[in-house]
Length: 63
Figure 1 (spheres, rainbow, N blue to C red):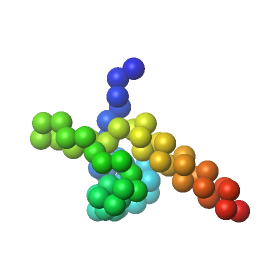
Figure 2: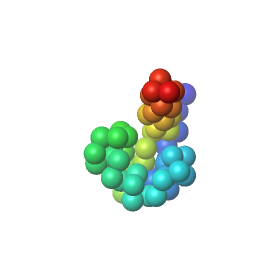
Figure 3: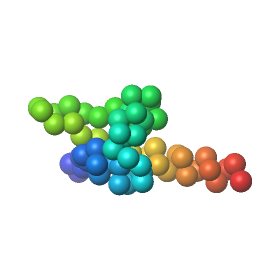
Figure 4: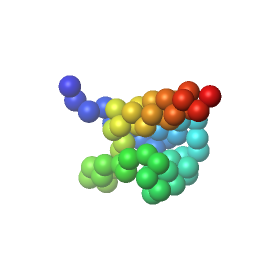
């Protein structure tokens, strides 16, 4: 199955955050760093979904 790649604005929409926060999160290790493909920067959708699910699981375990 081919990788599904996302632009920064798509990651921002998925996580309900600002595009600048996507970059901050990537710099600080909150989400995986993006891939550089030619002149483009893209995130792997599966990696972002894993991070999101881990965050949801953590929130559920706290309550």
